[in-house]
Amino acid sequence: MRVRRDALRRNFARIAEKVGPRGRILPMVKANAYGLGARSVVESLTPLDPWGFGVATVDEGMELREFGVTRPIVICAPVPPDDLGRALEADLQVSVSSLRALRAVEEAARRAGRVAEVHVEVDTGMGRSGFDWRRVGEWLPHLTRRSPYRIWTGCFTHLHSADEDGDSVDRQWERFSGVLSRARIASPDLLVHVLNSAGLFLRPELGEGVSRPGIFLYGGRVGRDQPAPEPVVSLHARVVHVRDAPSGTTLGYGSTYAASGEERWATLSIGYGDGLPRALGNRGFAIVAGARVPIIGRISMDVTVVDITGVSAVEEGVVATLIGSQGSDAITLDDVAELAGTISYEVLTGLTPRLPRIWSDDERPASTHRNDKGMRSS
Ligand SMILES: *Cc1c(COP(=O)(O)O)cnc(C)c1O
Image 1: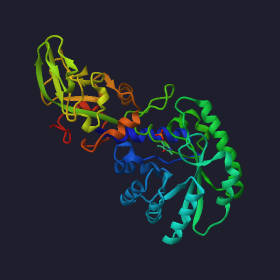
Image 2: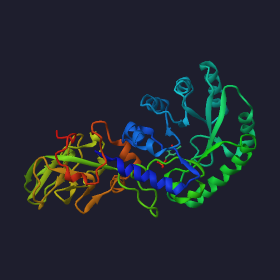
Image 3: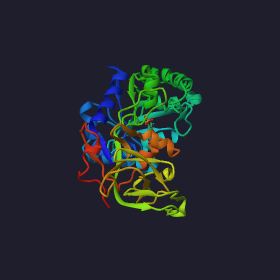
C-alpha cells in the first residue's frame, strides 16, 4: 500500500481554498486516519496549519498527544462516561449529546482538577447522537449556566446526505442555525463546525468557522457531480505464482470458477486478510504488466488469482495494481468500493496492518518502483 503525501497535502489545500480565509480546518483522523496511518497524516498536515484534529475515541486522541500533537483535539462522538477522566488528562475536547453526559463531564473535570472544553452536538437529522434541535428550550439553559468545571467551546451538527441531496443540507442547516442564534446570545464566541467533505463542496459558504473533512483528504469522491480528489492511496501486490490452466481447471474455495479454455492464471500475494474486499471475487480487477485483468474465483485470506490469458511479460515478482494507475489505466478507490458494494471509507479502513504503509512524495506512478522495500512478497 502506497500513500502519497503530496496528494494528501494538495487535497487539503483544495479544501482550504474552498472554505476561504474565514474558515479553518479540523481534519478528521479517526480510525487511524481512515487507515492511512494517523501519525503520518498528522505530521503531513500540521505544516499546513489545520485548526486541530478530529477523532472518534479517547484512545485515538491520546495517541495523537503521544505523537506530540499540541493543537486542539476534538472527540467528535459521544464519550463513554468511564473514559472521560482520561480524555481530560490528555487535554482532549469532548462532545456532549445529553444533559447526563454534560453532568458526567463536569464531574470528571472536578475530580481531575481540570476545566473541560465541551463541544455541543446538535442532532438535526442524523439521529445517532446530539441534543435534539426541537427541544433546544429544554437543554440550552443547562449549557448557558456557568460552571467552574467546563467551558462551552464549540457547537456542531453532522450532515447525513451531503453527497446526494442538497435540500437535506439546507434543511439541516436551517435547524442548526435556529439553535445557534439562541445559543450565541449567551455564548457569542462559540466555534461552529458543520461541514464534512461532501458538505464542503456542496455548500462551501457554510464553512465559516471550522470544517471537518475526512474522505476527500484521503482520495475518496464526495458525490457524482463534485470534482474528484487526487488519489492518495494505491494498493499493490506481487505475482507469486503463474500457471497454465487447461480447460476445466477449478479455482479457489467453492470452486466457483473453472477455466473455460486454455487459460493462464497469476496468483497475487494479497487477500481479504490484507483488506482486499472479498466481495471482489469473480467481480474485481487488477492491472498487471499494463493490462487490466479480471479477478477470478473467490478471494482467499492471503492470495487472489487473476486471469492473465494473452497478457505477456507476467512472471513471478511482477507487481500488480489493485487500486491505482499503471500506464494509462487506473482503478480508483471508488471503482473498487462500487464493485465491492460498499463505500470508499470502508475499503480504506478495512486495509489491515499486514500491509505496510509506504509513504512517498513521489510524482511518479508506483509501477515504476517495482523493487522497493516494503512491498509484500510472500
Ligand atoms: C467522519 C466524520 C466526518 C468526516 O466525514 P467525511 O465524509 O469523511 O468528510 C465529519 N464529522 C464527523 C462527526 C464525523 O464522524
